[in-house]
Image (cartoon, rainbow, N blue to C red; front, top):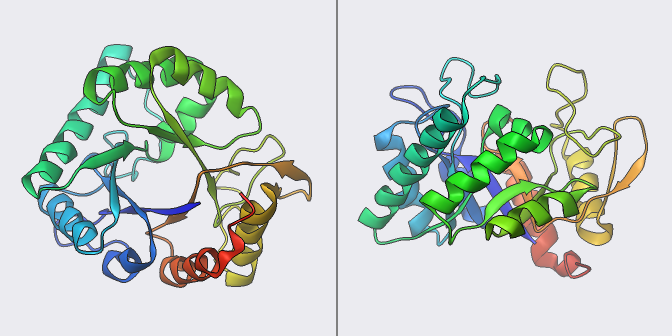
Length: 249
């Protein structure tokens, strides 16, 4: 079980997140690619920070929506979406190569991530974009109860997938993330975060916002780098996993 975190989301003079404090405690850095957040300098600096700590680097492409932080859906044609996706992955891939490190996976951000998990056409479009831009890399997708559907679609395109679960977000009864607009959708209390993390690691389960227990088998656990509890959450997850409690999976 690996810890991944959304990073490199600062922009110009605006600093978002605590990348330098979080990076030592994670395994995978999802680096924003300049559309929902970040800029070329921030991207390069984040690549260098990940390299310094031996953290695996992934591209974190999103909708071109700096004002909305990529959390608002955008109706794009297949051609537009592929171009946007390939552009971002390619930019980070070259920055990685310039620093002598590899781009190891791709994880869509925010509304793009949520849309691909709800809209089969968008998911297929992103798989086709992966075939063109980075066929050798895995695509990170949400570990939902009907994960076999996404595995089969990816297999048909020759793309690997890594499934992820979230420790700082609430789930609904369908195994999806509760919308941020709903009270209780985001966790900042470390006791709650720790309990959800241990449930995912030890039992492959999560308790939904309405109290239902569902199966969620994941390869990696995500924390949000822009969250107020990012640093203590990273420390907590690192402690839980390094203590050997992740051996159940």
